[in-house]
Image (tube, rainbow, N blue to C red):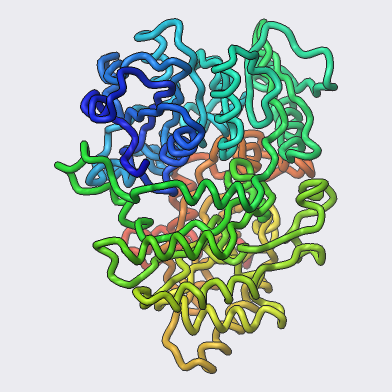
Length: 582
């Protein structure tokens, strides 16, 4: 079936259906594209034989929108969308965003704050006895007690606030099909990998690890850090243990992560009949800006073994890189090239980190992610084999398609995986054929002590990359540039550290536009650092810029060129210089 999933009573009538097995509720516009999580889960459940409908961006001020498709036979599935709703709705200074890229025409205000909680409770109000499954990144990263930056407090598991029956964390394909199967059979939902449930008693068997209670993590930062270390150490599907955390008189029980998908499984998911369009109900609006950026792009892999402290990707997608086959990607490229509005350019072939496609480690498929060291820090592990040869073959094949004129790599690139001699052919090939005018990389900072807190390479690695990039530019005679991404006010960074970065930029006449004010995302390492003001793994005390005034100073130092920043940045620099002379 190639029609979009039913989103209205008219859609149900057109299919000759009276009821649905499963209804998905999402905070995003309904876009039938593999970059949209609700579309992926909906298409997967449809392929498994279930009747699935979607309610996109419902009006949460009453129950009416939640009842428009009736009551599902099995369950409602609830997600905030592709982003945590608080990230969608607020800037890093806690101001309301003016644009929501996942809403029609970019209109803000179409999803509530804490959308998963609001949607689930509206559903419970409308259908008190229906089952509710929550998932997506908002639920995934809030599954145990967590520090919430927007409330500036430790919140309990989102399962309790939503009154949902079960939470799916991670990418969720395997767990959601298993949940649907068990509900069909009337079986218990206990023990499904990649899920979290609430019970009145903790499991006595299976050797669970008991984390500090919610109340302890709320009242004691040392307990919070201890709980986080347990949580973080059990994110591998092969070595992770069952975790329990008592909340008052109930226990939140997390089962180990779902195993990584095989290449065949991944191919099957991305081979589902996505239309790559927005639903007709949005036709009166312009398409969501988020669709325009990915419409002609291809997801080649998922997972990231980088484990940057501030990033939620490895927590949500996992540390094990899972790559699609060349045939699967090529089939998708052919479908894109046949689309009516395709103009000859595939805008991206990538994933969380573009140059990790095809990466392999002999441990991943049998023992999971190595707990002894990071894959990439301080340098790439010798056991990690990069898929550069396969990548170049794939890119050449895509470019050989009759209607494909250009194919770019717009996903982020790990520059530290391009500095060694054996990576030169790949690096040069990218620059020759798949970099438009700009290559996007993320040095994040220039001070090694800050980079180590971020779990990023030492700065000399970035300098080696820049030197090599210039060599390649001279060789290929192209006019390309590096776009650098930096983070301001990250835990561990002082004003003096930011001034050091500022001086480095000034000396090289660099004026970065891509500066992200640090935002503590739930359940990340950096969020734990921000809240506790300590490194959870070393116990090191960290400076943390918590006031908006200090955060503004950090950014002003990095972006001196902006008129509003010049005077404060200049005054701060002079003050720091004078204090050092004294």
